[in-house]
Length: 283
Figure 1 (tube, one colour):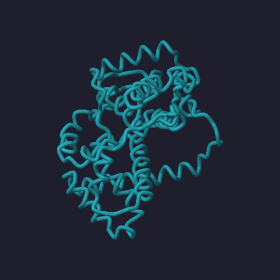
Figure 2: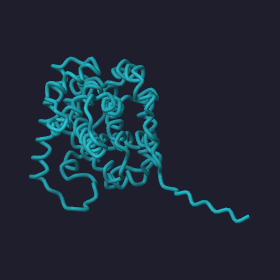
Figure 3: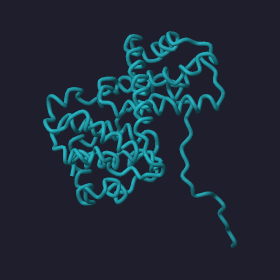
Figure 4: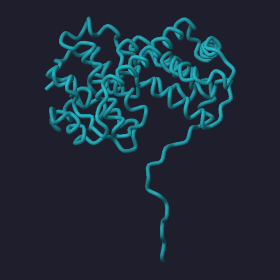
């Protein structure tokens, strides 16, 4: 009669299925389907009149800070940016609604990729209460409608494990974890820069892996060109395109490092609406 459960109640992540990761049909399906979820790369010129690229970058940076603060799964931020870009590709909005759109996209992405989604109340707080709970709920449906409820989008993160399992290089578990973490960080940076909207998710993932592996070339006895050739063999993406993407990723990383050094923020500061974002009068 005295039954006692000692099982922990913490969130558990599913393990990586080696059968799926090693099945080329899964990777080929991702490569075949990814362009279906690509946004219109010219929507700033064709659709949006009030929204500018720098505004997208500010909102994207804020969204990334919120996801980091809330310790979201690495897939949440890229997926939310996919929603945002696809929405802006088909629907013109005022700049005063851009942060509301970003919050709505994060809310939806967390529901799809998180075991415990982001709290709507917290998202309102993160905007400095510049939006209301009713607006967030309403815009969640607006976004779903404009995306035609097709929200299982393919992002660069969907390719990462498929790429790593096919690399012909041996790294110990600690090194593999570190390289993957770097690649994931590079992908997040790419999502904040609109220039990468022109690149397919597989190309961004491959470029991120190449950039992440660059610091371990001596350990695995490979070269930059050899990595590009390997990625070409895995994805069939032209090496020139992969090289261009890798160079842009490394340039973006360098700019981000430089910017971080010149714009240091206080430790423990909550990622509410940045000052420069408020000056655009989103609310």
